[in-house]
Length: 260
Image 1: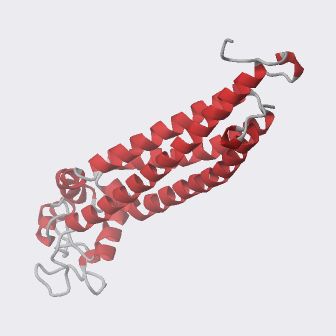
Image 2: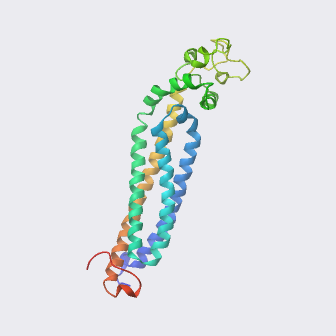
Image 3: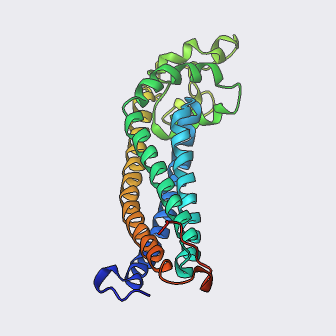
């Protein structure tokens, strides 16, 4: 090993990387936890409105967390062996994770500015077309019950729904999930005091925007941490390459990637 003093010695660099690996593992677990939490919390909202970009951001966010775990496992195996090829692959994985995290942060930041517009275009038509016809019915009821709202923009939206128009004998004017106090056929009157008048669109928009901000912040924070890992990994790689040129590579199985 080199006799260099200070922070440039290989054992010091490896010690920093070992500590980094531990923090790196925690960030991977945190990303997966936050991603699953936001997926479960907002599932009914983005599925009803068919917000494909939102769901893609969440899926990519969770995938990035899984890749962080894979990178940790690879780094845990590569760093102690002093093999430059393994270290080089580890650096490439770190760069890939950095790029994915940056992509997620950028997408989340810009889409939170447009998510309300997407809801405005899709939510009302989805409510009116899908209620009482497919699995989205449960999501609509969940949204109205938990957000204390009725319809996409107002309770009067429901009079245009396929559910109402396609059932001439129906007594309800709005779904029972619109009622403040739940009960069979509680939504049969046009203007009962028991019905929520406010629409769901604005409330859903606030929740989705907050989720995207959280995803953006976590992604940015972890991507900054990635820079530390990449810098020290490159430093270790270059030091090992320099050491490899000082003795026969076949002695320890190393093979220099950088020509002397």
